[in-house]
Length: 249
Image (cartoon, rainbow, N blue to C red; front, side, top):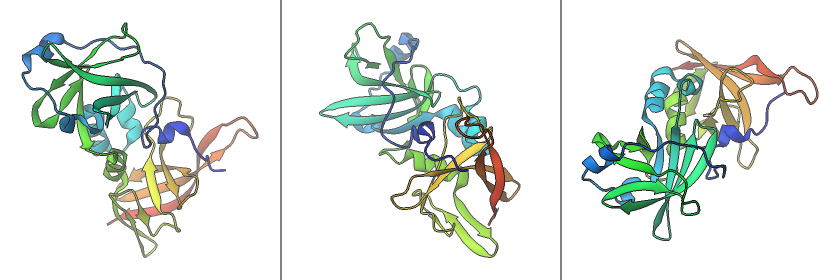
């Protein structure tokens, strides 16, 4: 039986974040003060991910491996709203918090306008467009909201052979040649993972995404069904039989 929609699978692929406030510690004010550069709205708006996570995702093609040992801010979507920059932060791809950006005493920081007691999170510009959010080096994958597609493409993107037929995972999040599925995505959050495998979603136009497990072995990408082996209401999921064996071209 396929798992249907898992909220955390799509947690960072859509615009919603949980409203709970994650406890954080402030960054290094001295480091912030030493940087004379202030970031403009254009510099900030977009889809950001933890730099260490991103490098590991590209190297391993495994978001599950990349999530191991990940602490602090894992991703952020920054949007402009009525002249202010609103930051939707994700912690460990599992919890979320919303802040606004302000400049104070020549320094920039995230703050919670509704809670003066919340710790302030400094913003520190680094080299090559990298910015520290509360001590976490972050890179911007997109100036809009397509960063999740960029991450999914880094893991699964490209052309494959499937029994003599071409399958293509495109950079824009579409897939062609895979039994009529139109779209693909990857799961980011593995804190509560019951499957113990990297996971992706496939969907048709207007349909609910279906979750699959995947793994690479050399040039082969194996996509497997996920089965509930616990019976009715027990939700004990395991990797099932291989549905597609794709060979990377």
